[in-house]
Image 1: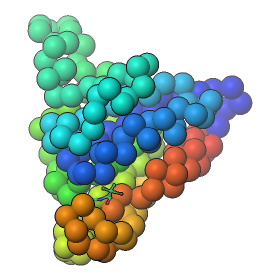
Image 2: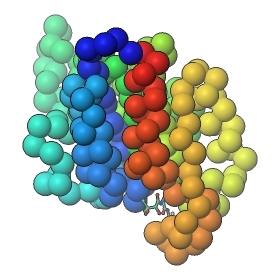
Image 3: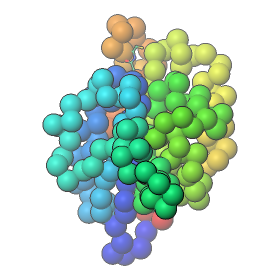
Image 4: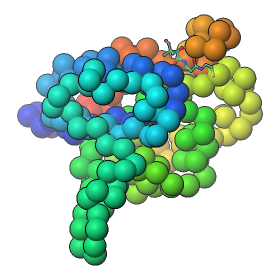
Length: 190
Ligand code: PCO
């Protein structure tokens, strides 16, 4: 990590109830002076799980519709490319089973997956899955995770707890403190 350099962090949330932790994660990361600016991407399903008023006012939140607000004609900026270039690090927390599968297979049908598809794999990408235990236990999950790890992306593993659906088991997103620590560790290696 360069002495006085500070970094742009892009946080992304997908359609898991663990998106309720978005404001906590944002605030936790903003406490660190190595982080210059945070921007957030939410998928349409993530919108069910957070309150925009809880997000700090200096943090911009982007969604799929914004892709088309900024682009009208040839030469206009393309939001997913701009965001992929702007960010020094991408933190996907939570990463739901569906978006994990899409990323592992190269699909890009919304703002977040387009950013990931355009991501320079030399830059750090941290992903924090969250899903029901039955989904976690299915063999396709570890296959998808291995694909992301093979590109150098960093897994922050799920933890066990009583999930929102009442089942108890592995599948909850890692604690905010754990994710923050992984982000700061990664920044040190830049
Ligand atoms: C339940 N699915 C889930 C998703 C993951 N859950 C979590 C935690 C939260 C509370 O600490 C919701 C953040 O349980 O990450 O619960 C059924 S599909």
